[in-house]
Image (cartoon, rainbow, N blue to C red; front, side, top):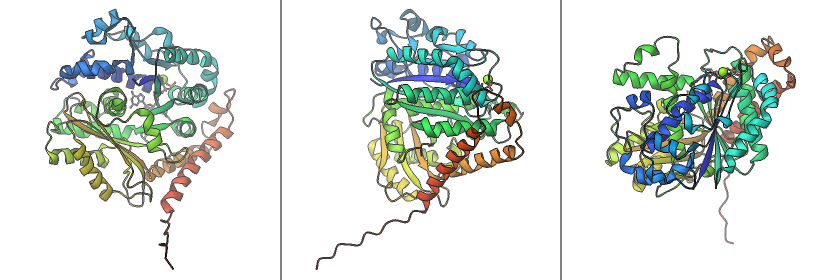
Length: 477
Ligand SMILES: Nc1nc2c(ncn2[C@@H]2O[C@H](COP(=O)(O)OP(=O)(O)OP(=O)(O)O)[C@@H](O)[C@H]2O)c(=O)[nH]1
Ligand SMILES: [Mg+2]
């Protein structure tokens, strides 16, 4: 049984978490959140699978040995059995994490593993990494250690945070470094939300660059999502469904709840191979081995089809044409969590994973791998080696879905933009004093971060420019 520890850092990380946990429970047939259940109102739950599913309950939850998972039907059953989410919640302001102290799920979260403060890190990576990192090192290590001690087979950490603010970016980077130091044998996957470009945080270019440096250096696999991409997906879905929420998409306030549910849909799919039964299992810990061909080339494109919880796509069919459409949609630029096309001209696919859930069969996967091989450009080594997974339990509300994970050299566009945004601010040294006045922060961190991101960019370009080696045929004399 694979077990995971989820670590939510900062406002964004915890808000994503507040969607993640009700949906995880929903997958196990246990409903808890009125907003989500309203969103899923037209959808069937998984009651019919709940017996198989509950076997996998341990992946995300600690269940005392005396409890019987098969008896879990609702939140009160979990509370009476003293079930706890394998989660550590961190934020340097307490308004978001305190929501986990209220509501129906409150007893799932052990308060000793919730670390908060006031008033936050002021959108300053240095404050999160240096000040709060030093101050909270012991408490964070302790919370992770105690959560890890409750695991029989700890397979991985799943970190959720944003790159644009101060706590998620700085303290999130710090926590990832802690994990690398103390649990080097355990994989660390990171779901990191990148800002839009039209920023709500002026110092985001610094925070983003400093965070990316640490994620490249210390993460096993990084699954970046851009808020612009999440927002565009929400808008498209809303326009298809004449959704009531559409009105709120037109004002300047981002609909985080809907955007986060797109992200969580991807995370549930990402972890399904580790949690749920299937004929071709892809464990989270297999992902880095398959997706990261060289050290530090660990930024992965992700896309899911159907893209959200209330998609109008009819996936309740084993019809090969509808199955193929699922794959086509998963490769579409519109379903990507980054505003970058991983197949754009000139780019190469270094590695690919396709994970199907539900009704898809092995032949659906094999047929679509051939289509994928004809569609994309690959490195000389990656075309034949495409990792496949089949999980028999579909996501809530659909009977099939596909997750496509790609390591594509098109990620260089993200790195170039990041460096350009940084240069715009840094050439006038705007806002730099907020960082340099923090004890432990040195201005050279900014230059080091730029170098790491640039080196990663160069490494991809080098791979892109490699010519296939022609090996002459042996000639018999
Ligand atoms: N998708 C998404 N993005 C968010 C959410 N909350 C904040 N953001 C984005 O995250 C960035 C700001 O980071 P936050 O997570 O709010 O900051 P923090 O980690 O709490 O750090 P400080 O508040 O500076 O201490 C901005 O780009 C926001 O647009 C959320 O719930 N979902
Ligand atoms: Mg905050």
